[in-house]
Image (cartoon, rainbow, N blue to C red; front, side, top):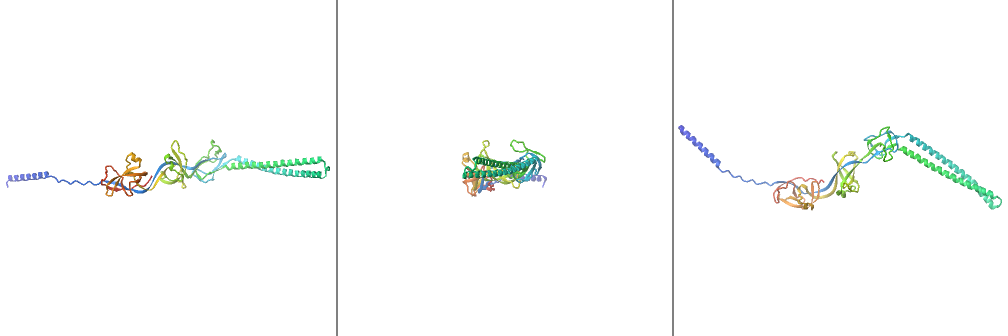
Length: 414
């Protein structure tokens, strides 16, 4: 083959290749079949029977059941103080002893007064006996002379009879005086003994004791401190200690006017203490019975036992005050309910999207009841086990097919 022939053959091959390539590009592509749209996945929850409760969370500060500044009844110097801050004491336990030297002398003087009065009673009693004896003699003499004068008139002079009668009356008067002196002396003994008892009682006040069992939360006095008698409300007397009864604590809750009718004595409540991350049992012990005009609340006191002394006065606590309960009612999550119009909301009517047996969407109206923070009671419109959509409901239409994904319904809560 000549050189020219070889060039011509190469040109033909290149041209053939170009024609084949152009034919391949111009060939129509295969039309792809359109994909079938899948049903959307929706979150659903089953309606279940639960116990629902609605409550009101109130915050308050723990206070001691009792707290008092222990004062001294009498003035004196602290001879000895037996307790300090943090000590637990029993009722009647000796806290401090005061020293009052002049009171010892007063007691001795009162004791001497009692002894003197008793001696005067003894003397008055002897005088009464002597007067009674003298009266008996004069009376007998007068009676004898009177009898002789009656039996033998003229034998005894009338003057002698009159003198005897006069002596009898004088002796009788002396008996009355002696008896009165004896009574007076006995009354003086009573007075002096009362004074001695008062002095001993005042001396007992030199022993400062605990009025109830509690914890010493503050100590004001030391050994040698001068303590004034705390006998008047305006007195500036210094207390000995501050005593707090912490075995039982109080919570004073400002219950709103709307919740006042639900509060009753003996009501059990849960008291949550955030700082301890624990819940303690409490009981409604008392309430004021009056709504404050300024705050429209009623002070309600709870008693919280604190035998292990974990709680301290001043700690904050949250109280879940149950206002209403529903036992074994049908409930759905709040997230599944659409309140609808304002009028429907006022009539407790709501709307939910129910998943039918063939996974189709169905709109349904329901009657609502008690509502908690997560659930709502269904009074009519649903059955136990019905599945309602809890997720995003935008774009869903009645009769639309969906793929349900069950989520767990939260507890009743409050």
